[in-house]
Image 1 (tube, helix red, strand yellow):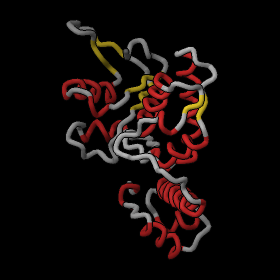
Image 2 (cartoon, one colour):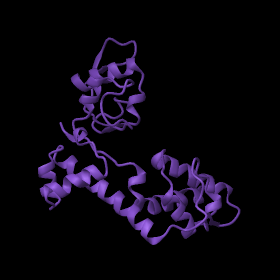
Image 3 (cartoon, one colour):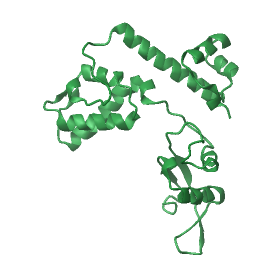
Image 4 (tube, one colour):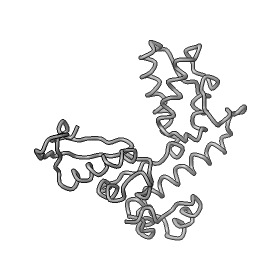
Length: 223
């Protein structure tokens, strides 16, 4: 894979799931830019940009070597969980719906507004992949072209029998935005609260109250 990616980019998904021996070999490549074919004494080089993804929040997970984590985390991009990005859910759901409707030859499939609201209420412990599987299952199993809330299987959460009130929906969306925004400011300032507050055009005390409100761990943003 490294040989084929020479001059380009290699993407390693769920890098913390790599076997320990593979982690050692990957670390050696990241340090030296060199590798060997299995059973060959010849040293080869590759100029590769390595992009890795993990569900970890720090380098302390038992499955991933700490030295490999710090070698990979030269530039980090933190993506908030889907439950904190409820405004993204309709667009993502529509994207998956179009893809799977084409695969299943059901081009007229659509999500009802009630279904979209149900998707936005769900907590999504499996993040985007869970959403993808929920939509695919609905496209396959729904009897009609309009996918209703009853066509969505959302494990661990019963569908609401009454629509969410405007006030409750607004509070939920505002809370999600506040937390995501504060974390983005802290990420850009490496956890410096004063700088983050200035960047957000808020006084430090008000900014700190938002941190406490959303129980944000500032230390994880600090180098």
